[in-house]
Image 1 (cartoon, rainbow, N blue to C red):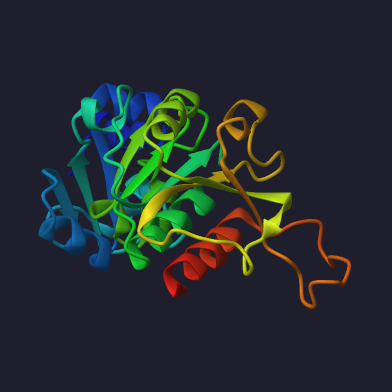
Image 2 (tube, rainbow, N blue to C red):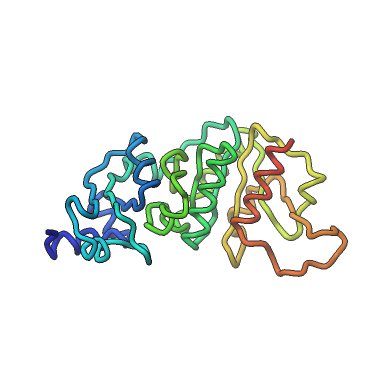
Amino acid sequence: MLSKGEIRRIRSLGDKAGRRDEGLFVVEGEKLVGELLASDFTVRELYRVGENVSRAEMERISFLRTPTPVLALAELPNATEREASATFAGDGLTLALDGVQDPGNVGTILRLADWFGVRELYCSPETADCWNPKVVQATMGAIFRVRVRYTPLEELLATVCRAGVPIYGTFLEGENIYDSDLSPDRGLIVMGNEGRGISASVAAHITHKLYIPPFPATAAPTSESLNVATATAITLSEFRRR
């Protein structure tokens, strides 16, 4: 049986501070745990209903509305790989998130990055923590294949700009993405906050402002804006189509 202390420790991983203190994050569900076991991540503990925990205990430690039969605790990647001093290789297509705060959006964007072959995702410190249980769940396993690093984006983009790498961002006043000259194999795409979009300090480094038009393009938008995950899907799809 799990002790009260063990249950408290697992539940503490729902908070960023708890994950940092323990150096662990939670993975739930047969599919996700299977992806975890097949990855290079280190599994610290594995709980399975009927083997080492009861169904009632799983309900107490689970972060899901409907608990699954299996839950694992995995070690966080080395801090130097996910925070500060992030370097930019300059090859391929890369994503950056500027203050995207909804865990579901961050998880979905990670899944999109994996689908469209983007292997690195840079996040501003204000972006939701990718090791949040809700984010991990929404990635559907992409979290184990896309490298995520948190860093001040202004510093990173200044370096990228000096290297001559195109920096794209989505704006309401940008150029129609379907008419734009895109570089599908070399560039960095910035997606902004759900309500405020890309911050002014980050926008100052954008070299190509893009706009996803409604249909038809001359029509007034029927919605104020697109969800950031939806906009990311459209943007990545158009880059890969070229």
